[in-house]
Length: 176
Image 1: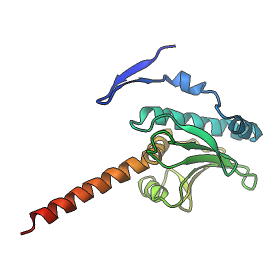
Image 2: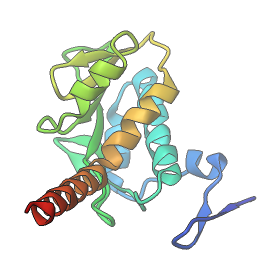
Image 3: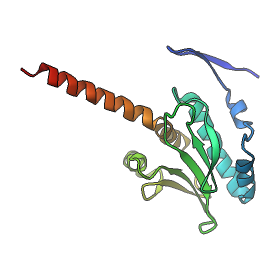
């Protein structure tokens, strides 16, 4: 298996090839069982979202290894190692059998931001989800952007706060 090595300013890291990510085994039996319980058509759609989440995490600096677990009985992806982002969850509901969704923490401004950036590309559910119909062609580039924003949410907020703090400190030091 061919691996790609990237040199960042922090360290040399191995980036997995897409084939390795596609074959990523389930590390959590409960998550594997949750996927197995989905209808086969939806399972394929949700597995494609899972693959995109892992591919995006690998290509996003500072995210680190994702933890795959269940939250509310649905597959969830956490940045437990680095704490860089917000949880991303995927799921399907029996009440809407032709729809599946990617969920984001409802107390963030993530979905509001996605709605502003991609008003015609996605269907949104409140401030917590991007919803897809079974027949939709998922715009993976736009969705990867959304996943990156979620998985790096805390890093961006911390950087913004520190810049703001530095600015306030500079202003207060410069006053006569």
